[in-house]
Length: 135
Image 1 (tube, one colour):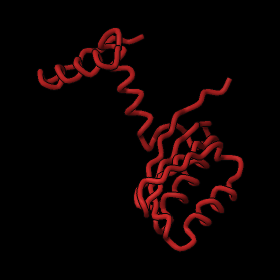
Image 2: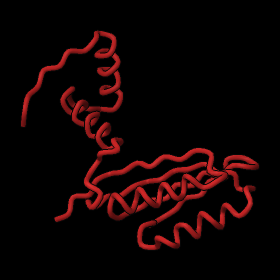
Image 3: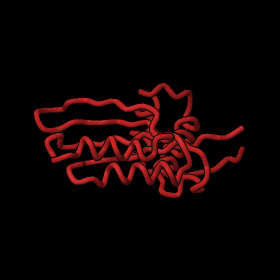
């Protein structure tokens, strides 16, 4: 393990201390390690494209958009080995939220997530990737 020294503004350090106390971290180091893992997991350079990962793509879409629900299902069926589970939530009269858990190679998971979130009628979408170490 390597030790480092960093300098932070007093206000930022106070906010971070409050955050780690609320979350129940035992010390600052644990909080910083978790923050760095979080930052890296949101990076476009997460892992090599051929490494394994799990991902969660969440998106809000207009369910009245012509044929969108069918297109979303068909997109997932074309990649049938990657989606593992989907949760569907009705937000209001027009909008739905879906969260789909994906598993596969980083490149495959990103491709499927991009195909889902780029559909006309998808208002907002985000992919969260988590690396999976292979034994």
